[in-house]
Image (cartoon, rainbow, N blue to C red; front, side):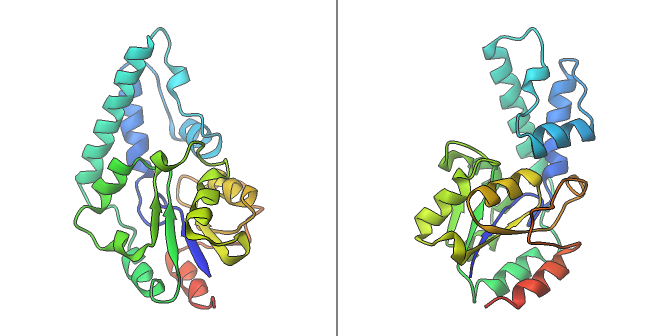
Length: 210
């Protein structure tokens, strides 16, 4: 079985930091972003929040986006974002499965999280946001990963934490297991093959795969 892993919310806990960075930058221009609005705009609809900013030019919006990216990088480098048990789980599974990470994160943010860490070395392929045109819930990220690994949907299993990630996997024809994060637990995961309340429970189920 080829395991295609989402990243944020599954292996690392970064969504709260992204929310914080986005909220801080939007607040500087008078836009309030609460957790529920963030969940709808980013984790379900995947439309972002820049359309909420009024009266700014394209250049000014671009500057705000750069500020958000810089702030997010600062927060990522300020502490350990690994979900407890994630590294040990991945190291064990890598001996039995081909694996890839398929993330919506920018490569620079991914690298900031894993600088000097062993986790990326356990994956055959890492796809970041720059590696495809359309982001989840579009199937392109997972279709791209399968094409590069020369595998079929029937050979793969996706691990996701968000509704848009589940929709991307479903559209790509790949079965999907979900492990909801604190920000996504109220989402619609009815199309997931299985759902897990904790990383140890997911790990135990993955051990049973052939």
